[in-house]
Length: 455
Image (tube, rainbow, N blue to C red; front, side, top):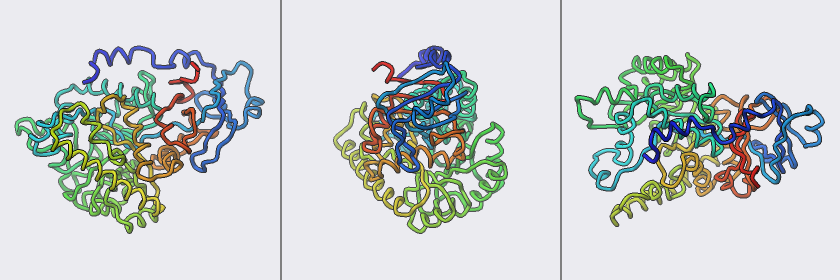
């Protein structure tokens, strides 16, 4: 791994960026910037000020107006010519997984999922649960420092790793984004991992997944995750899960007031998710125009995961491996297909009017990037696929907040919402890559990062 676990522990014990400033901050803070963008409309308030009290936004307006209501002794954070935005939301991530792709020879040797399965098995069987949560804490901090103040973690976290990480962040013991935890991913036997040593296979698999074998097992799987106080349920559907199983799972989850996110790529699996009444469909690669129409009518969200859309993903994650000309050409072909498929999907989604959000689906070690920087590559990927900057911004703020059921807390800068703010130097509606260069991060009224202070 790129960082030893003792080094990770040391990082966690050290004060995070801006923590000293946060601890000494006044209860009331005013943040000023040249402009503030409302992602729902694209309208900008210029100049803008945000009045924050006890971690909550109290007022947004012109600086003179806000200062007239600001008590003496309040702290002022002046960001100069910056653009203020709501904290970013990664609606689909995996903070307890950091897969390093193996060398080409190992990929070829595997009969199934050769780039992913070895790293997954290393996380499940090669790390203790405690070590894995410490790794997740590092990745969570890196996400926060890149402007992701809220994330939805959708599996690959062990039995309760994401719930434990969420609780530690909420208690203020470690820095990280607000998290929704889904617990173990619910799957059919044979998905994700195959052909393990039969002496250890069940013990390994059950650390990471809950398995379906009929409608009753689907209900039990929901209850098993609910035991660890999850925020939602994640199920992965291939063509090997029956409609009855998915319907039972959704019914049980909704009975317990838990939303259901369904990994579904094929048209058949997407249809099963739609018919079962899922809350969101993750990926949706082969969604049809008719399915998009039905999803729009039902108010169902499509959560796009654009990691492959920019045509460079596979080359980037293999950047440190030695490639034969044949394998290099194969990677280039996969990237080209990903770019073409992403562009086609995005255009159909935009035409359909369906509700959509976006998530990085990041679970990979990308050489040269922190986890937050790797997650932020989704903005450029969506732009490459033809999505306008305002739609991208909505997908990771207001739309994502609505999909999560947190529209009353996050997703916009307005009175009553949590003071989760980010700022960039330029205009993200002119150049969405500004979101890859976040220079100011505030979560709950506390400054995490302020690069503008050194200018």
